[in-house]
Amino acid sequence: MTQIGNVPEINAIKQKLDYLQSSGLVKEWEIPYEHILTRVSSAVLFLTPGANTRPEEIWASLPDNGFTYRLNDDKKLSQMEWRVEFLRDMRNN
Image (tube, rainbow, N blue to C red; front, side):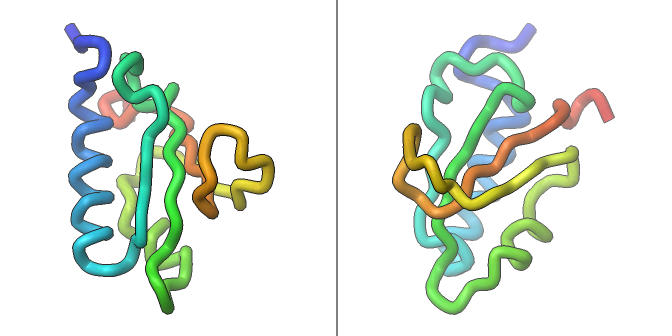
């Protein structure tokens, strides 16, 4: 059983984002309210690409479990540039 705030699929995405940040593709990222999440399909993450990074490079590096992305125009949950949402959990592929 998945523990609230400790979701293996979200942890894997966080590790990937940490790697992308250390490699310079992502300047910064965050997952608001991650401590209350129980599945990746309820997660919303935000990120800002690194300098000279095309967003397509980031999307190609994320897990392929049906995600959508869009510019974060409303800036309600985060001030970062992009909003990413996953449509389904990876374990349900």
